[in-house]
Length: 235
Ligand SMILES: NC(=O)c1ccc[n+]([C@@H]2O[C@H](COP(=O)([O-])OP(=O)(O)OC[C@H]3O[C@@H](n4cnc5c(N)ncnc54)[C@H](OP(=O)(O)O)[C@@H]3O)[C@@H](O)[C@H]2O)c1
Image 1 (tube, rainbow, N blue to C red):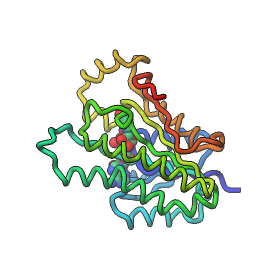
Image 2: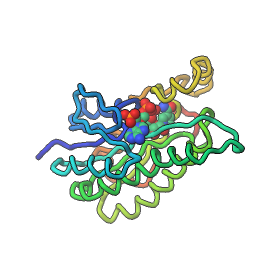
Image 3: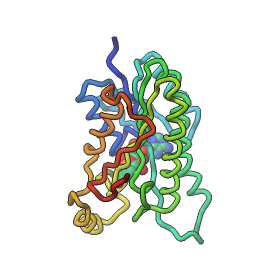
Image 4: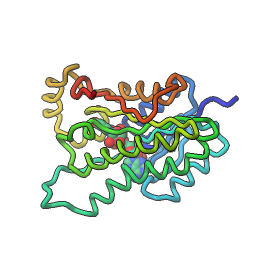
């Protein structure tokens, strides 16, 4: 039997790339997908722009002969905090296309392959959807809240095929997305008020994704795991 194969959409950087490395260490075969796949890397890779339906279709077409047991959707962008009076439809549409529509397209085109393996899906959500975002705009929080609804609703539909779908909700995590958008000094201040007194490393999130995508996760679906150092406690 082929090794379990996981595709990480948004696997070219940050949380997705850390997850690729962690799953590789754990014996999975990994395909990373994104717009900027480096030519030299140790993983199988495929160019994919999640805003483009044909691009997503091609990605899953290229995986048809693989034992695809997992899909991680880590693709995401953030947007600046602006006042509602400056709301810009173009910014909104780009965020929705990347963060939400892309996830729907990946599940649409990954469905038949995951049905064959009774596979698992993990969506990378955000602490923003549990509360609010300090540094991103309301559009970002809204796209993440939309993913929360998607996971719960699709969990019921996909359960008919024994496909499980769950989310992780990271707090601020040391990736290019965070470091390029928030001042270093502000991040140092933030660390002091996090109960565990540090920002998340991408690997902290990768470990939780590993559990959710693995066969160890036998009975969780439609759920979300908070990975935020104690900043927000759900339930
Ligand atoms: N860092 C944090 O503090 C934090 C906290 C909570 C949640 N998150 C979430 O974690 C996820 C990963 O973010 P990160 O922090 O790891 O940021 P990152 O390092 O910027 O990674 C973002 C990933 O998304 C991919 N991506 C963006 N637009 C895409 C598109 N149109 N098509 C395909 N891939 C696209 C990027 O790949 P290419 O550029 O190669 O396309 C990259 O692999 C996001 O959903 C983010 O909202 C992050």
